[in-house]
Length: 233
Image (cartoon, rainbow, N blue to C red; front, side):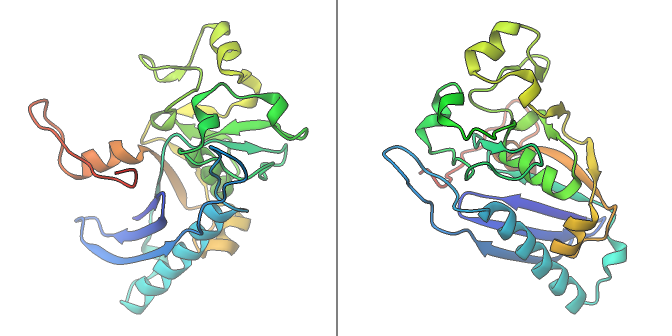
């Protein structure tokens, strides 16, 4: 299995076998954030996708060098940083650079007036990268963190029409939400060419970065706690 971890400072990708043994890993630093104005922090150009594609290619090379065969890989788990916002065109390309979780715009409702005229979709970092991998407009409900019209009890988009007005996010601009563990889709021919992943390989929704980190650290009982010192600290 391939685990993709899209972080704040780098992309990490690992290959694990069915026993949980690490077979190969690779990491690529992200480019420095761009700040086009006060309180604005963006990932320049298409850096999140470019980094993911390069890191996956690197881990597949490392896996092959260790005697592995890409045909053995049965699935990809996709996890990214939360609170980011991607504004996409009709074809799914970026209408503007992905806004980092540090960007002050993410603490406010989405403003159509501040978006490009060809903006068609709004999604998270995992929604965008999942789309680049599969061509499907689906995202994990576990990453709908921050100002999104989500129902946190049901982990679906809100049934209240006013929630979409308050957040400035019409339902038709949003990807469908799925539960963690759901297959988002298969790797497209274009994504296979960019990453080296086998075409059709299932890509699985996980959750947000800190939720996945907690599970990976063994936080499964109500009497346990996890202290996580991340990028912000």
